[in-house]
Image 1 (tube, helix red, strand yellow):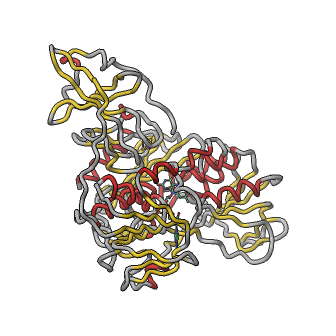
Image 2 (tube, helix red, strand yellow):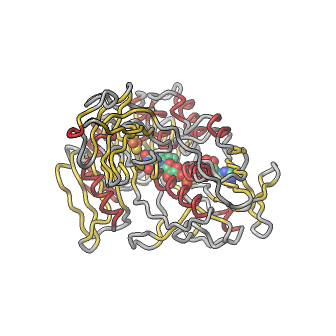
Image 3 (spheres, protein in one colour):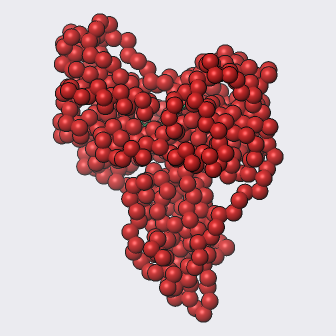
Amino acid sequence: MGTTAPLTGPDFAAGIAASEAPSSGTLLGHANGEAVLLVRTKGGLVAIGATCTHYGASLATGHFDGETVRCPWHHAAFDVRSGEAVEGPGFNPLPCWTVDQADGKVRVTSKRASSAPKPVKGPSSVVILGGGAAGTSAAEELRRRGYEGTITLVDAEGELPVDRPNLSKDSLAGTSPEDWLWLHGQDFYDEQRVRRRTGRVRRIDVERQVVHLDGAGSLPYGALVLATGAAPIRPNLAGDGPPVFTLRSVTDMRAIIKALDGRKRVAVLGASFIGLEVASSLRHRGLEVHVIAPDAVPLGRVLGPQLGAAVRALHEKNGVVFHLGRKATARSARGVVLDDGSTVDAELIVAGVGVRPLVGLAQSAGLTTANGVLVDATMKTSDPHIWAVGDLARYPDPRGGGLVRVEHWAVAQNQGRTAARNLLGMNEPFRAVPFFWSQHADVTIGYVGHVERWDELVVEGDAAAFDCVVRFKVKGRTLAAATVNRDATALELHDAFSRE
Ligand SMILES: Cc1cc2nc3c(=O)[nH]c(=O)nc-3n(C[C@H](O)[C@H](O)[C@H](O)COP(=O)(O)OP(=O)(O)OC[C@H]3O[C@@H](n4cnc5c(N)ncnc54)[C@H](O)[C@@H]3O)c2cc1C
Ligand code: FES
């Protein structure tokens, strides 16, 4: 998916002089038509694919910390010895090559075949509820670690697991092919022996270790992974008027696209990341888009006023009309009625006003919940056989921020992996630093770290020109940073936060 790293630099298959090999860090080249990174590790030279398996960024400008190389676009991290994606959003491993050193030359020779993991002991069976980022990565990690038992991935949607962030971006804009929607084809799940089952889980019987599906039987489990995510909040608007949509699933996205037919004006409720991405994508489709939100500055509470103002200006330049400082109160035949009595004409409403973690199943099963399912550092819930991951889980922030629930794609994936390892007895705390990205027209904003409130905000560079780092500090310590066009700094901060 995405781009392919260009074939530049030396031909490693033909060989380079040993003196040209990197004495530290990485060197981009190619071998037999593929972009390759030659990497100097403590143990010597290794060669891995130079193209990120997420959306195809070149890893040549990524950050190498001695063991992993981190992608400059969305911060996936790959182990340079095994090629494994150790942190999302990359799911698939990078290819690895054998490096030969003889006669003063370094040559990249054959591609190494990936070795099958050694079988490990684990629970009698694993049932995963929710085939999103967290659930899917838990299933993959179990197999990667050599778990041989039955894995059942239950999801309420009758679709293959989906690349959810793309639903508000290229997929909604209509600029990406249909097959970009899916994380993997069905053949992948067949190969991995992951049974996909469609159904809504109604109840968990923790005594008998059984989950009950709505009208579709029940499933016993040795270990259970709760990964049902969150559901969009539907705004409570009085009166009748244009249809209201939310966006979480492929079905939601298809329903919005279908409803656009013959309609020209859309009201987006909420100047959130999803609301603004929807606005951008629908502008791309040529619709007139009005964004209604109570905030004074879009995204100001997350990105700060300077970057928020720049995001607003970008969308305005792109034709979006903002109605800020206003709440939608009702629908009318004309559109959306605001709290000052005015009406924004619209034929369709898309609400992006936040999500609620789906804690109902956990609550009725007697698990401890509080704005999410409470887990310990290993992602285990109050029940010894149940782990909770992703948008649903509230976990102890390893950087001392208390209990947090983070709604990011890569966090959900990384937590799925941690839970998988821990239910196999590895007992590893979840330590991945949160990262998310958001796309607005041709501008990508990255955000590394996590902070809910800050007492100091420092802007380096020019936020209005989308060339900046915004640091969010508490008591002088940078807890998070938003970056635009500053990939190197974002990667350095990610690395620094990981070491704290
Ligand atoms: C449109 C959109 C754009 C986004 N863009 C970004 C972005 O750019 N960057 C970023 O970092 N994050 C983004 N996010 C957030 C990111 O997608 C979520 O953080 C992530 O999907 C959470 O993963 P999850 O596995 O916890 O939940 P989900 O991915 O929501 O998966 C949960 C699954 O559980 C299923 N389920 C729910 N209840 C039941 C039940 N009772 N029985 C069976 N199955 C059930 C659901 O059908 C769903 O498939 C975006 C989210 C949306 C909706
Ligand atoms: S392209 Fe590498 S993480 Fe997205």
